[in-house]
Image (cartoon, rainbow, N blue to C red; front, side, top):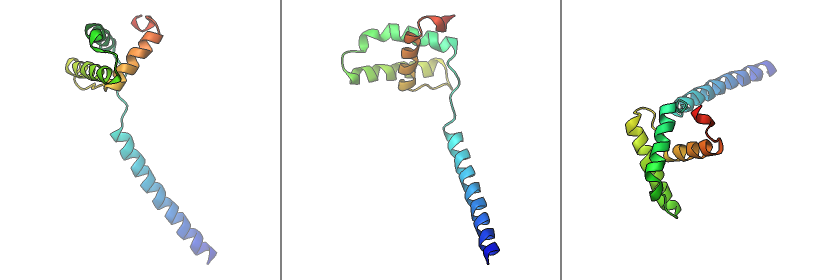
Length: 104
């Protein structure tokens, strides 16, 4: 009887493992990582921030709207590499803290 239960347990684990693997693969494919920022994208981001810097305003809402505009402009300039407003803001901040080393 013990072997029967052990065999049923192993079969259940194999089935569960297969289901988890399928779930992991489908989630991974849905959330694939975007490619790294190209030098051209980074330069365009700098240009857009400089162009729109007066629109950032004092409130978080106006800042978010401006980052969304920047993300849309980047999407037009670089189709297929759609960056979110959050990604644009994070990249800008990382470029600022990293100094000009990103340009080298």
